[in-house]
Image 1 (cartoon, rainbow, N blue to C red):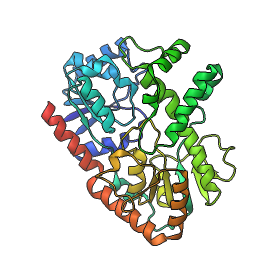
Image 2 (cartoon, one colour):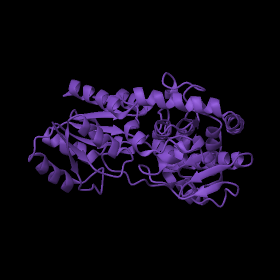
Image 3 (cartoon, rainbow, N blue to C red):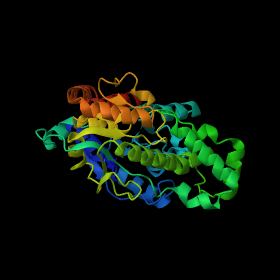
Image 4 (cartoon, rainbow, N blue to C red):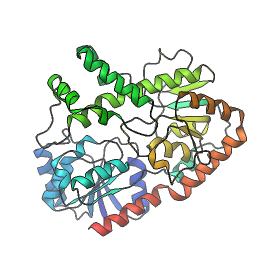
Length: 385
C-alpha cells in the first residue's frame, strides 16, 4: 500500500509519517514545494504526470492544499488531508467540494461549518501525541527546573498593529472593543459575530485581501482570523505572563520581543521535536493559551504537554468535554485572576499536581496516541474509497 505524502514544515508531519510506516504503508514524500497553494496550473500538470508513474492509494497532506486537490481530482486519485490549523483559509476554495477529497478537521466547528456548506467526505478527527517517541527521548529522571513555563509566540508582529494607525477612530475603537470582549471569554469565539455587516463594509473599503478567484472566504472570517485573532492572542499572552510574573517565577521560550515582560525569565525558542518535550517535562506548570482562531478544538500544545508527562494549566476549549477532566488530567483557568490563584495552589501542592500530570499522560498514551488516531483515519478512508 503506497501513499504519496506532501512534505512541508508542519509540526506533526514526522510523527504522522512514521506512524503510517509503522502500520505497514510505504510512504513516498512529495518534496517539490508549492509556491501558490491556491492556484498553480504548472504544479498541477507536473503532479498529474507524477501520479501516473506509481500506483498510490492516495495523496496525503497535513492541512488542505487546493493545488493538491486539483491534481488529484484531475487524476481521479483520493486526496486525504488532516487539517491542523484553524481556521484554514485554504479550505474556502471551490476545490473543497471535489468528490475525490477526504478531509479531516481537528476543530469540530470547522468540520460542522463545511459539512453544512455541502462538503462531502469531511470528518472530525482530533490531534494526537506520539508518546512512544517521547518516552524514548525524554529524561524522566530529571526534576522540575522551571516553576512555570510557556512555550510559544507572543504574536507581537501582528497585522492589526500594522494597520491600526490607518483606521478611522470609530472603527479602530470598535475593533479594540471586540478584542477586549474576547479576552473576557474562555473557550468561545466572539470575534466573527462582532464583525457586523456594517463593520465588514468599512473594512472592505480600506483593505484588499488579493483573494484567488476560486476563493469564497468572507471578509468576516478573513479579518477575524488573520487580523483580530492574532492581536487578541498577543494581548492575552502579554497580560497573563506579566500578571503571573508578579507572584511566580515564569519562564518563556520564544523568539518574540520580550522587553515588555520585565519580570519574566526569557529563553530562546526550542525545537519542536528535540527540545520542547524536555521543557514540558521539566516544568512544574505548563501554560496553554489557545489562540481564539481555534474555536472549539484541542490545540496540539495540549497533547504535547500531556504526552511529555507535563502538567497543563490551560484556558477552556469546548472539545475538552468528554476527553479531559479539570483537576483530573489537566486543569483550566477562566481568567487572569484564576490563573494566578491556581498557579499559586499547584506550586504549593506537588503531590496533587504530579498526580494530575501522571493521569494526563496515561490517558493520552492509551487513548490518543498516533497509532490510535491514524488507525481511526485509515478506517474512515476505507469507507470512502
